[in-house]
Image (cartoon, rainbow, N blue to C red):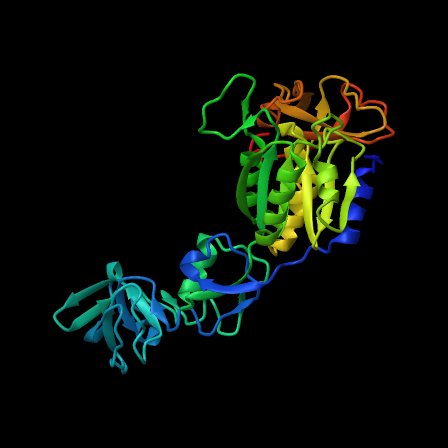
Amino acid sequence: MFRKLLTLNQARHVIQRHFKARPLGTEMIALLSAYNRVLSESVTAALDIPPFNRSTVDGYAVKAEDTFGADENKPAKMKVCGIVNVGEATKIRLAGNESAEIVTGAPIPAGADAVVMMEDIERKSDELCVFVAVSAGENIMKAGTDIKKGETILRTGQSLGSRETGVLAALGITKVKVYAIPRVAVFSTGAEVTEPGRSLSSGKIYDINAYSLSTAVQESGGKPIYSGVFRDDIAKLQKVLKQALTCADMIITSGGVSVGPTDVMPKTLDSIGEPGVIICGIAIKPGKPTTVALIDGKLIFSLPGHPTSALLIFDLLVRPIIKRMAGIESRKTLTVKAVTAIRLFPAKGRRTFIMVKLKREESGRLTVEPVPNGLSGAITTLQKADGYVEIAENQQFIDANEKVTVHTFKNLINA
């Protein structure tokens, strides 16, 4: 097949021209099933939180003005009219020089505007001696202090974690409207690839990519549909791809995209629908043989079989699209500035991504050095790397002790 190498930016533009990534739809689900789901509409509070004035301490509800001037030598004296417990309404209404015992979280009775703590009183039968003066509102959490009725508390596009779920539960919400999860079919190709769990015969390797890519799909907000491992057989791959198109919103394959006699994926993709292959090779390293097709309005990413290449291309091209389909706002990768420990060379004429390891010197300077990428099939490069350094197509090298930007794979607390 004729292969025209595109730059990375050209590849992105081609994909955007053929496919507009947007949320796939919405659904209403139970709050207890909404972990990590993305809100498709903002949530407005239908009530105040707390919904009533409540005590923040154990003590006695009083009128603040009745305590003015009170001290240890001249306590304010008042009558105790009852007790207010949590979880129950109270009919107590305080008049002048009256008080009510109250526990933390209980509603403030009518007529009271402050609470005196237990350690600042002395009680004898129904008479209370208060040894400190309190001001209006002291030791009271007023209704709506936390959340006000009508306030927008969560917005469209927010992911639901434990804190967000707690806020929704506080408002009495049991169902939320969220974006649908993109379904992504994932499978590997190659005569040498065997599914984990099966016996490994001579000349075979276990399937790495379908598992790592499936996890990457989950990280991006999608639902992976693991479809297995298949030989480089056009008829078989045609059947598998057509079946995946009926149940998935996107397909990701790995292997079969280079220039060998068994690299049949581009030809297979062009045979199952229109417009077929829209990208067949990108001028980058690693990831040059990356192939992208559009069939029945759905994207098919055929990634290289090299595990490092497959995951890097996923991060550069696939992850942002899945996130947009899931309604997740894409954020730029975390970057740090560092200094190169040695000279870094790109592949001639190709945008190059060099996997690097970060190291903090005793002086405090942050340095990077490349992680050996091994030969085709090496599986530990990304696991050992903290991130990557990008070198442009027209740049000859990055010199030693030169400052670079490192795109990190995760939040590095101490770099």
